[in-house]
Structure formats: C-alpha cells, structure tokens
Amino acid sequence: MTFLKSYIISKKLLFNLSILLFSAFLINASFFTNSRIKINTPIKNNEFLLEYLSVKYPDQSFEHFIYVGVKRQKLDLYLNGNHTVSYPVSTSMHGAGTKAGSDMTPIGLHKIKGKFGSNVPIGGILKARKYTGNIASIQTEAIETGEDAITTRILTLEGLENGINKGGELDSYGRHIYIHGTAEEGLIGQPASHGCVRMKNEDVIDLFNRVDKGLTVIILNN
Image (cartoon, rainbow, N blue to C red; front, side):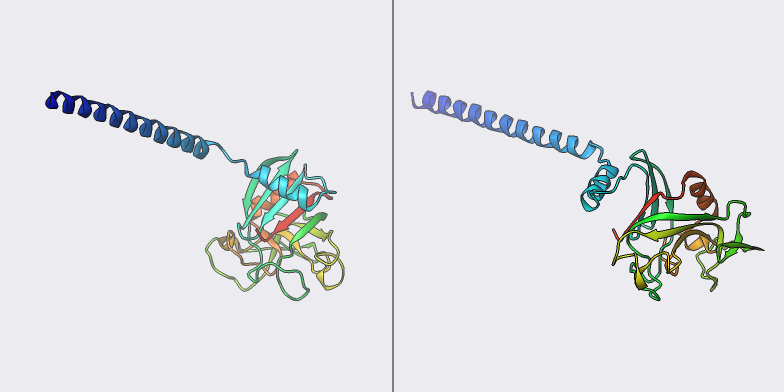
C-alpha cells in the first residue's frame, strides 16, 4: 500500500512538473516570438525625423527639404515627405557653431538662396561664386591639400532663425556658408571643411539638378 501510494504521488509530481515545464516553454516561446517581431519590424527613420521637425518647427512645411546631419556626415534629400537620396559630405573640422570667424558649420533652419555654376565643368574652381576658368586637381586620397577650393557647383544658404543663424555675426549667408563641390574628395565623410558643407563633385551636380531655390535646408548636430 505504501509502495502504491508513493508511486501515485511520484506520478502526480512528474505530471505537475511536466505542466510547469511546458508552461515555461510557452511563455519563453511567446517572449522570443514577440522579440523577433519587434526586431524585424522596420523602423522608418524619416518618420522620427519628420515628427521631430514638425514639433521643433510647427509653422514650417517639411514636404521637400535637405537634411544635413553633422555627426552622421550625411546629406539627405526629402521630396514629397519621402527620403529620395543620400550623399556623404564633409562639414567643418571645427564642429557646429554659428559665430563669424569660428569656421564652424551653422545649425538650424535655412533655405537655398542661390544656385551658381550651372555650366561649370566638373572640378571647375569658383571664386566669389564665379567660374575662374581653372580646373582643380581632384584629390581622392584622404589628404589635406591646404587649399579650400570651391568647385563645380554652389548652393548658397540663408539662415531663417534670428539669433541662431540669421543676423549679425551669426548670419549664415553673411558667413558665406555654401553647399559646394570640393577638390578634397578623399576627405568626404569626415569633418574637414571651414564651415561649408562639402560634397563630391558628381554628387553636388546631381543634387544641384534636383533642387530649386527656396528649398528648406535643416542642419542638425544630431
């Protein structure tokens, strides 16, 4: 009788243990399944960016705009609220800032004020926004040439935020902040400019042909 009773108790214990193990398995399986769903669910970065911009600049439309990420060293073009194309860039070697003489890349809301160099050959050097007739030797190695040549195309930027990038020493247009081509293509992708947003020459031609004057440009030290 004692043996039978022990057998029944042991069987019940095994049964209960099996139930516990199976329940634990289901819980873990559910956890990992949900984890996989979360991991594999695509995150649309443009949605986060657009939401941030709509909160920071509630009176501004962001259907068509250029976004320059200083820490990312990227320039992204958005058209109709959708990401269209991305280019590597070089912003200032001195970081982000707005004061005249700082040689920093200004942050905040801007617009394209002017477009220059539409007929300039690739690598053509511009001074005072005019083609000099000279062609730069494009350096594709990560080497500083010692010359801050502005090449191929220029998009001038006008600051739109008083006290941040507009007016006085902070004025981006007064500081001659451009998006432009460079002879130092090997340094694209890392901070290397003297305040402007540098691009590879073929890239700046492509961007130049896609955008119009008045387009919104947002520069963030992201």
